[in-house]
Length: 303
Image (cartoon, rainbow, N blue to C red):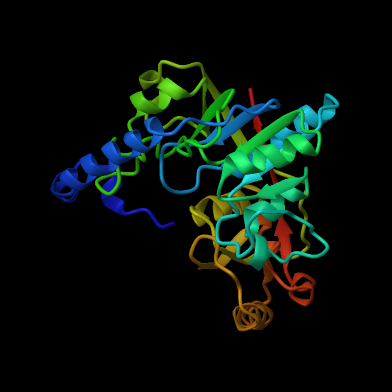
């Protein structure tokens, strides 16, 4: 999602919206307290956040799964499949499309079996039947249905907690204090530009997003992305030595139409540019379009 600019500071808009923010905060805490969560036999790890907007949870969840897979554990992802049409399924990459599953679920399924369900506890029960040792929740920190044995709160180092206000006055789903009561670790992705680490009482780790090997002969690119913070993607390309001549931003989790890609392919060809996108966007393209678009793959690494 595109976050409002005033979420970064405590201006008149934030002050005007404080009554709604108070109601939102109270409703979240009541919802969390009024339900008895299901305790799974497998270890449940939640990669979550307390802020709206992209912070890099999915790459972190994938890296966490790879860690346990190397240890010989049987890992399953449980996710709601945001913007996907299908529910209560195990993702089949050969049969299900990105439009049916959502982009994040498709990325996760490339690492470990992925269950899409709005009821996380039902996903955990299915994972248990299939022999799961570890269940990783991509998001769902505010979901009360499933007990979390270990929760990581992921933050973007550049934005931190913004103005510290709750939605809609600020970017928070709940206060930092309340979030920390149910979590075990803080993970700040990128340089901590807001001093967030000093505000946290939990152990703080620092991570970053690294690009996997990527080398195009034509260094002049047209880049497009439908993610929470597309400027991060463009900056990564620039850091790798590419000249980002043209950019096209789409809404977060955007499902591309054939005409969208066709226009960008023509624009790139007319201007002698390479057409590049993120892995999250790439999985939503048709097979034919994938052959005309380059993809920058990333991974999350942390201390």
